Amino acid sequence: MEMLLALGFSPLASLAFVMATGFVADVGSLPLVVSNLVNIVSADFFKISFADYARGTVPVDLVAVLAALGVLYLYYRRVLPEGYPVEKLPRPLEGVRDPVVFRQGFWVLLLLLVGYFVSGPLGVPVSLVAGLGAAWLLLVAARRGRPVGRLFREAPWQVVVFSLGMYLVVFGLKNQGLTAYLGEVLALFKTPLEAALGTAFLSAGLSATMNNMPTVMVVALAIRDSGAHGLVQKP
Image (cartoon, rainbow, N blue to C red):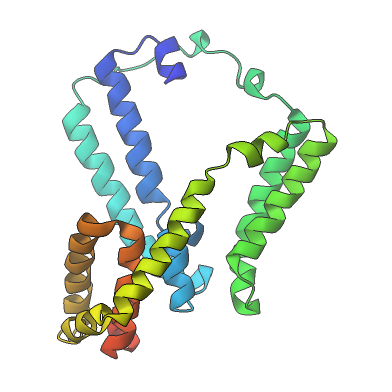
């Protein structure tokens, strides 16, 4: 938003870029298990490695990104400027507060990507890989005198508490027979296409009712109770 304001974009043009950034970042990160807590829970529950998850979702992701860009362009094409004066923006390096931490961050990102692919066959959880990368950056930042304690004070710990609460809710629903009932419904879907569409609509309805985090856990348990296997289970 600061860049768009500095370039003198109109409010509608700014909204177009904000919408595009949000949609493409959200959709484009689909093949990465670590892009969303829901992905991590699903992949861990069904024992899907980082590489297998990416291999199965990249084709879908390409279609989704192209569809998002196409719809956004058709809707906002009249307000998009033909060009913009780059010289009005400050030099990118002026936004770097600590060049050492900045460069280390790029190395950590590269090593994380490699680590995610390597960790699957070794049985190492992605949380350990991410934790090691975070610990290294914290160490580098602390040695550089950066205020790392602020990260712990301002971290959204309420999300962790919320997730734990959702786990309790989900297993309470499981004990009351909800997942077994949903498993019977999912067992009606015999082909991969039926399984994909049926599970998608069921998940969408449950997400609109009780949030996506408990939904993905409920549906995962229901899929297991349905007895689905092979290609029917994968969608």
